[in-house]
Amino acid sequence: MKKETKETTSNDIEFSTFYVGGAVCGIDILNIQEINKHFEITQVPQSSEYIKGILNLRGRIVTIIDLGKKLGLAPVVPSKDNRNIIVNSEDEHIGLLVDAISDVVITQKENIEAAPSNIGGVKGKYFQGVLKTKNQLIGILDIDEVLKE
Image (cartoon, rainbow, N blue to C red; front, side, top):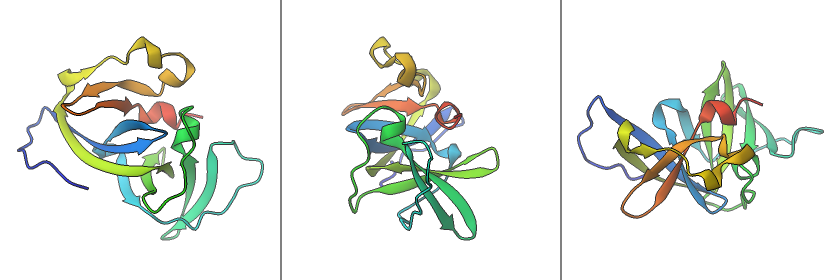
């Protein structure tokens, strides 16, 4: 993961960006416990279709979610670039399986725009906004909303 060398200020927000289902998304790095490529996932019978399973991460059980399926995008295609983004949710570790990790992007809160209406609807609730950079449009995930169910 390449990090910009720009100095940060107290107004700055840092997002870890990643690819999932053909889209570029970001999560505030303060929500991320770690990013790993640990894939000894055990299937959980009769779980939701977006739950890949569970894994043992240093003695803690982590539920792994296929973020592509959860967001209504294409499911994550197994490859060497796949990563689990481990986040904390109400004292439980949840892993978000993504296609690949990208850069850390630093911005100010005022640069995040409301999510456009075309990503509205049921799945649009998972996004708190979008960030336009020189090269791309990044969907900023509302991690609490993603992990609610």
